[in-house]
Amino acid sequence: MISSRAKAGFDKMVMQGLKAALAPSADEVSELITLPELRQPPESHAALLSIASLTFRMLIVLHFSHNDAMRRHFARLSRQTVEEMSEQSFLDAICEAGNLCCGGVNRDLGTVFPWVGMSTPNIVDSRCTAHLGVLQYGHLQHFRLSVTDSPPLFLTLCVSESEDLDFDFQLPDLAEQGTGELEMF
Image 1 (tube, one colour):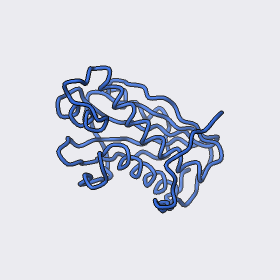
Image 2: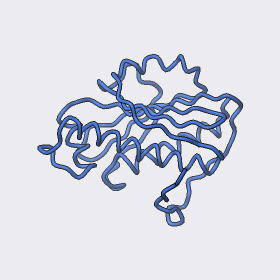
Image 3: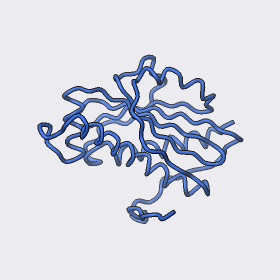
């Protein structure tokens, strides 16, 4: 079982990661909310990223479509022009934004859990997300991020636990938080 405090902590981590990775600047985030459900995937594709520890598996699903508005948004994020963005560089920009979001969550999780690892992104058809139930999750949350001059972005968080989880996560003071260090394995 995942406690309500732990669920709130996971949500805070993901929301902080979304703001940092999927908006050109914090000033451009006009809305970031949780959604009770996504009946159908809002977009045609998804980038799947996972984070795992000894006690849980977390799947972060970034929903996207191959359309002009989405292409403009990810071109802005990756500091490219839409004209120079190939299909591969579009997917790379989505995966990089997903990695940045997941990396922030992974860093925050490291303050609570001693062993945490992150995967590389996988691109799938969004219909695959209809099968998240097979993961027997203890926590499922959907988010919508609205950014100035961009389409809304949707993300799903799915956490499956192997033992009871309870922790209290407080957002770190950004002035004290580093930008990240290179970690050698």
